[in-house]
Image (cartoon, rainbow, N blue to C red):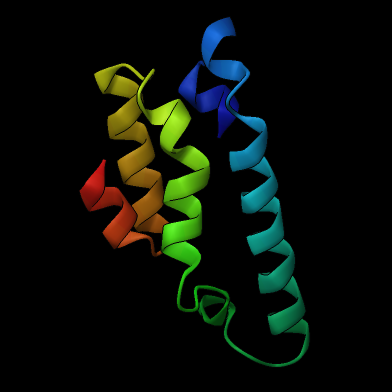
Length: 86
């Protein structure tokens, strides 16, 4: 995702918390699938707020094309509420 956003050097420094949370969600999804459950269960209560909190410092520095890409990807991942607030 970072590559698709074409982050500037000023923006890159705000990327690590976002990446860490995305990796955490991905690991939860893998564990759920391996346990025979649905990957979407990883998006429990509060995950949208955690994602928005992690991304908020970066969001203020993004260009409109980058924000559109984030919204598209957030919706694809099930973060409709987060996408709507960007």
